[in-house]
Length: 256
Ligand SMILES: NC(=O)c1ccc[n+]([C@@H]2O[C@H](COP(=O)([O-])OP(=O)(O)OC[C@H]3O[C@@H](n4cnc5c(N)ncnc54)[C@H](OP(=O)(O)O)[C@@H]3O)[C@@H](O)[C@H]2O)c1
Image (tube, rainbow, N blue to C red; front, side):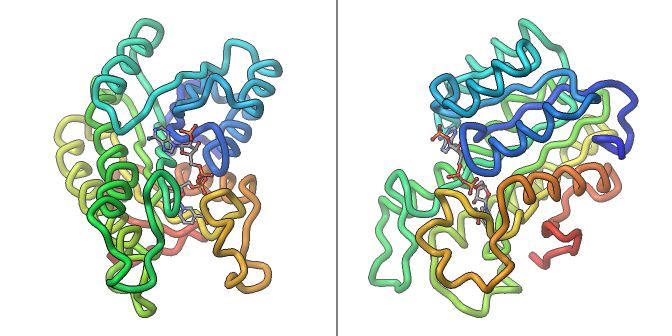
């Protein structure tokens, strides 16, 4: 299966949130493909991630590691300048940026646990960083087939919310979905071959889900490599006609 439905050349890919978890698994899976020419691995600690260092040893110049805090627009500008020195076009960008209980975020169970600080921290990483990443990468996403994916979460669906809780995380992903859908409309005008997707990777065994894995039914906690493969399949299945939509790992659409 082609990496992107309409892509006829080897792909240049950027993964934001690449130092661990699903982002790292995506780098591993993409580098193993012979239709991927280059992977840019971006995280705050990309250059010190032992796992990314191992991939760099194995794949050499096909992997470029860049440190960037995606909440910082100056850092995003510097990131794009560095990439533009070596490459004019990216075919696939996947943002795995997201926090649930780190960096000041809290997985609240009740309104009484909400704070402005934790709401802001969650929105900064889960909502603002991915859309600012897209804004800054726009010069690299023109004219050819280009797909921008952000990992969202099923709990960001308002229609699917029956349990409540996780106020900041749910709301940050719902707002991310709206931003992605809005961007898909603008991108259609700039580049009709562009695709923007929100994807729920399924509950995956990473640092983010670690404290909550006790409630996950048997067989429904995925390895990062499994989730990465499902995401790559979705990217290969959904082209420009599906831009602005929200999919689960099993290729079922999720209501907003
Ligand atoms: N795991 C699940 O069960 C699950 C379920 C549904 C949705 N998701 C979504 O899937 C995505 C990936 O989750 P995960 O479980 O793989 O998380 P994770 O293991 O915690 O990894 C998050 C990655 O994002 C990077 N990152 C965080 N803040 C950053 C920033 N400001 N700038 C640049 N990089 C940053 C981290 O690296 P550094 O610390 O080096 O920056 C790390 O590489 C998230 O959006 C999450 O909401 C996950």
